[in-house]
Image (tube, rainbow over all chains, first blue to last red; front, side):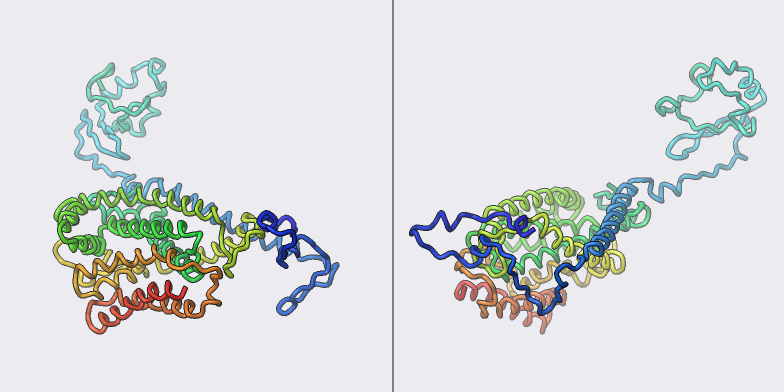
Length: 178
Length: 319
């Protein structure tokens, strides 16, 4: 382990010497000549007797506990930053809308804004409902019965965007005059 | 991402971040307190360099780049305080940029140019927001240069004598050693971010900026106080402004005075003494910086400023 830690022993002294005999510093000599006769400073720390089983298991547990903490910290930071881009609370507060239906005449359509998109609210007359029911369902892009699309046949409430990429239709135009 | 740099919307957009954006309060407090924490680390690093005389030959270049980085940090922090558009943001920017009017001939032109108008206004806010985003990238480049310059000669050791034949493995030893420091510092930062996030700021900045009533007590953030305190100590306006430059010039000039072989302060007792005197003086100046400009604060400030420059006078003589 000591050999791995000490990476670089420069030949600084050997290159720069001019005479044949020179003084090698004690530190340099000590590194070049490793020996097992080592004395330790036991003033503050007591040595384990040689041959003692090491504290490796305890140390590894402590380090692993630390790594759990670092992982949770990274998870927290990533989540906080990524989720800060999600809808903020003032946007969410505008997510529900209440509309007064009593002022809408039969046969007219009211447009309101919900989630940033127009919502068409149409109070249908009997003729409108019969016309909707008479259409061949299979000729439609989205083949579903009218009864499935509405809760109360008198009120048709649709989000006014095309399902393709979200454009908004002109009123009273197109194939069906809707 | 959530902020709007327009004079009518800036303050409210910051409040929107604090209240409505998911985790916005955390982002804002981490950013604001992060600036303070960052500057604590920078000052520790600077004083460590002063203490151990790391700036000595052959490492002058590292030191000089470090001073440049310090200037970049100071500018970034100053202009970053303007976007929240509180009273202190507005009036701090007004006062500090007006200092440039002390320059003899072109002062007022420079001030108008910096403001982008006749006062801190829409143009100032917009450009400060942009520059606050840009300057940190310059800082990153300068830090890489700082590290590269360090790599040329390597770190010194605390004792300070040349020791080229024993080098420790960076990744193993210093990663673990620094990890302890990072964890301790993260805990220290978290105390500020989560328990006392507004302690290091000024409550006046929670009032929207208003050009008509000046805040009673215009004070910069704590990390500018030691530098700021030297300003009013010199009673002449131009003199006070001119006194700021020598601070950085002294720092820059340090490496070029006298080279010493053994750097450790234990072997230089006089330097050790005046180093701690300098540190105490900086702290005192910091406290003075947030007091109103009245007696006896002015006198104390004058003495402290003098002591500060004394450090730089004595060091080159004694080495």
